Length: 360
Ligand SMILES: NC(=O)c1ccc[n+]([C@@H]2O[C@H](COP(=O)([O-])OP(=O)(O)OC[C@H]3O[C@@H](n4cnc5c(N)ncnc54)[C@H](O)[C@@H]3O)[C@@H](O)[C@H]2O)c1
Ligand SMILES: [Zn+2]
Image 1 (spheres, rainbow, N blue to C red):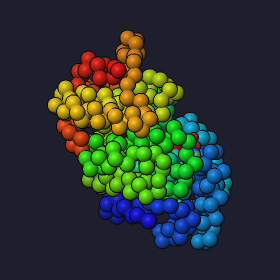
Image 2: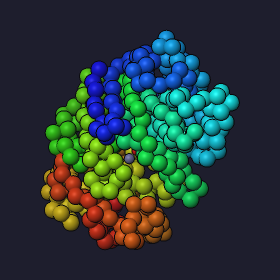
Image 3: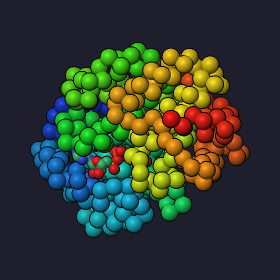
Image 4: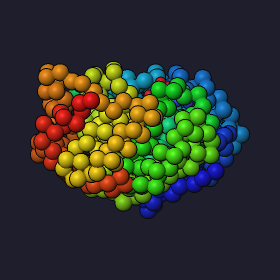
């Protein structure tokens, strides 16, 4: 088992990464000095696969766990589902000392974390992420929240978990498309701050695509280390944390104009990162050979690197980028790369460059 520390003073916590960790969930929670009652929030795909194992492990350690099932998919990140969870927690009399286990992908993590942050003004929660994206990204760092009709993640909080348990075995059941989408975030860590990781991915991609245990363990742990360090330095995104948004300005806009239907998040930010690399070549002199390495790696991972948009869609894309909540004073700011492993934030980019960068 690998352990990564998230350094946040009194709110510090550990990320544990390994195979078969769900069986240790109870024992690990026992070390956190929590109450005896807890609720496992999980979705209708994940609960049938893993809720029993999680519950059993918790029971063995003396916890009583209820399971709260929520619908699978992004629609679960809604006030309606939050309300449903509150009602279940209240009906089962969960108290201030009780805790929540988020068992699932990023959707469940964001939703369950938000419920934990607000029920009884906040109860403890533990992340048990089961998608690659959730293990390397969303379960770490404490951003929790839900969507509104007006947009994604518009309601939320910074609320850190007490523990993150990444059981790599759970990834075996993940559909191929979801797994590859998660790789887009993995590659991102290499581009934003670790050239050695990027090179490792270039070398070991076939092993990673086969989900080989040792490679997966090392890579997930490295990604968690990077995220932990960034979050440790800038918990609430006043500066450094923005580097995690590499490729996301365009990515989020693509998701929004396709109404979250066409692309998985990982696919949209794959296109976004290749576009950001091309823009970086023009604005910061990122060498063309490195742009090509970036594009090639995404393509080898089975991810899209380009999209062709009509005039009307280009206008929509621009409008969506302006609506992004990270826009300040109406200016679209990009995270761009000077070289693989080194990025700078707050870069102004003319819209014409963005359009060119997206084209095949
Ligand atoms: N909080 C953050 O910092 C942060 C960061 C990135 C993304 N997010 C959020 O994460 C969400 C996306 O997360 P996601 O990509 O994990 O999607 P997801 O939670 O919807 O999971 C993807 C699909 O895989 C299924 N699934 C999950 N684990 C499985 C397993 N082990 N085996 C089989 N099927 C499984 C789910 O039921 C779902 O259908 C978005 O809502 C996004 O906003 C949050
Ligand atoms: Zn992302």
